[in-house]
Length: 327
Length: 286
Image (tube, chains in turn orange, brown):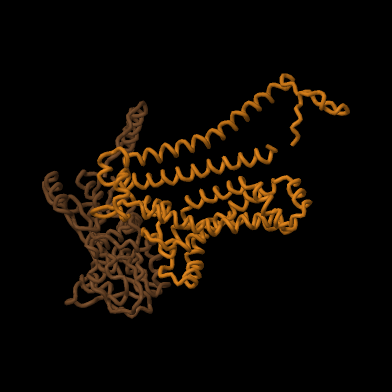
């Protein structure tokens, strides 16, 4: 896209004079049409923002009793969330300990990132720096196709196939565990990280590569020491976007993790995540009960976490853009 | 449980007005028999709906609305007069009975319409054949963690169960754990079929759920205590109460059913109705 300002007559080629862009010359109907389209587009943009705001308000409103309502707080309050290491919200004495859910989420996400980050970043380096054009043209759509696999299918795969492999490799007592769910989750976020990282690597100007190669660096040294650091902010943004997805992803962990709310140090134990708890319990909970408010509070935690991560990713993208713009 | 407050505001009056208008026009048009409302246990909601569908297809013009919410919700609705029949997976509590007596001058009418039994699933290769309720309590409570604790091989026990949103979970917690806590290591799976599937793949697994889903797993006989015989959850044993993890499923009404209500209750107890009970996965009472 050329950024030549149309108002500057000096740049306009003399041979083909520009069509005059004078608005009042347009017929009235065209102007009305433009106005309608303008309003319509504005509404579309606004509705996305309004939807987001409504969701935030809704989640916060339903979660608020945990902080404010004395009747709810007798069963579920911030203090009670950490008073017990047990999540058993149904029963005569409900126990709302959310520590096992936080630990469980952390465990699964760590496994997923430990698997997905190296794989997807190195795949992106290969695709952008090493692969012949033909291979790259094939590789990119295939990896991005992985993003099109519904998470329920990935979860089912992990439940039936992957869990058996993981158990026979590790000898884990529990077939469904954090490692299994983490692997499946990792598969789910590889395309996100790959796609953003590959775009970032490819946007590094050709001159960087040429300069490095001209100085005698090998292709690998160029990729690792020059291109990857130059695109570092963009790659980081991809990793953060993958992280945000991993934290919020529900179906895979619901199916593949076993959902036992236990705190332990090993990834070979079953875990229960925040998102899976919400999905499993919200459907049957009494509206307005402490259990209901607590689940929305968990939703609030998830929302806040992914929001912060996404904002962080946005900052990284800005930094990359400024850097490559020749700052 | 709290009822949600109406938000007051400019919308409130017109909304109520519209509701009243709708109500008035609904009554005015007439013609159709008044709906019979059935509310209560989530365990029974599917069963109730199957009965209602079958009954309505046999009786043109009959209208039966079945909703869930839990046995407690059903009893509250019965006391408030907002439902005709309360479906319950537990007997009525003394306090609820008293409230109905005070309001309506007579005790509620109880009909046992079906029975429910929970099977204990084991892997087909597991040598254990029977467990007592106390052993089950220790296993699911996390006190016994290896199979040799109940006379089996020296291997860890892997616990499978249902989500805490399921009625089966609550029932198991109440009757087997005697309201105690589940061990934290119980893996909760969505649906009885998932539990069966998991146990079928896990030589050290144990699970619980409806007796109707038994593909690829072995049923474990259960005894109430060491003195009583261990039994399997067969229709016969559940009906005769020889199987210890079983319960009645009830219909409650404010007075003895009559008219359309009696016809519906009788239908639930008829051969057709009881066949639906088996189809849904519970046990007939007759």
